[in-house]
Length: 140
Image (cartoon, rainbow, N blue to C red; front, side, top):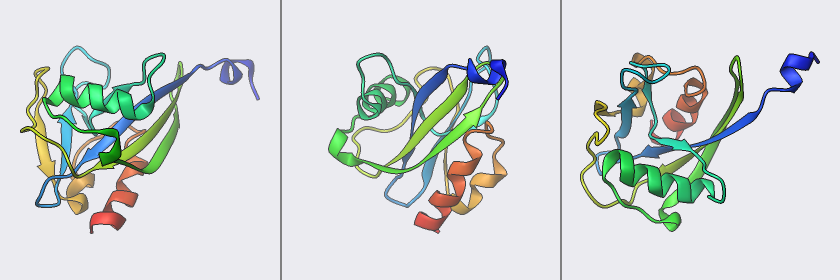
């Protein structure tokens, strides 16, 4: 293993497949000015020191989308492990079917409710792509 590869820090990011009453999944578009701008992703974000992935998702869903949920409503489904140039991303994906509030892009990001079978039509970051197959298997 090369020294550069060994020295990459691991970044823990939690993601959520927020599922509405019609069985659609929410995608958010990364806004201009952020890395990978314009790509679509599952909502979530970096797990801060002292936070669990579930606590991070509760916070991120509130801050980014204005929806409230609880740890008991977050079910782990799968995870992604992806090596970027300067870090290695480890991203658990949770499914959430129970939440309160109407999702809206509070940080200026576009959002879309999408059927699992249509997820591949959206350009996504490389780390998000392996998360699609388990969602299609779950939701059809």
